[in-house]
Image (cartoon, rainbow, N blue to C red):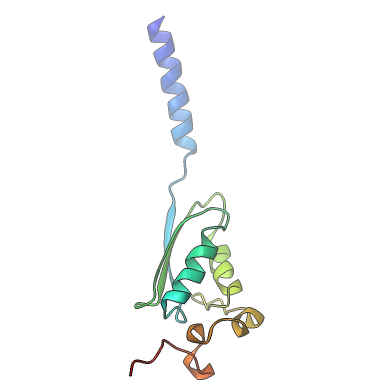
Length: 119
């Protein structure tokens, strides 16, 4: 009897483990991410995206590391979500209307933006 239960348990466990998809970790170039405000905007928004489990913005290196589940989203959707926030993401250009509403510190240098200047 114990052997039957053990066999059933092992079969079910194997089936469940076989369905588990390993999360994907992607590093995305976000050249406009240059201050704490940029970091906060991207991390807060991306955590609400379907399939995204972790977001870390390194504004000094201008890299955003995103961990996501491939059965719920894909890399292009992740990049598009960042672009919809007004930030360039690798080869995906920022949404212009949203970009215009970003704080000045989060804008490109050619638009008068950039990190706060130290005196």
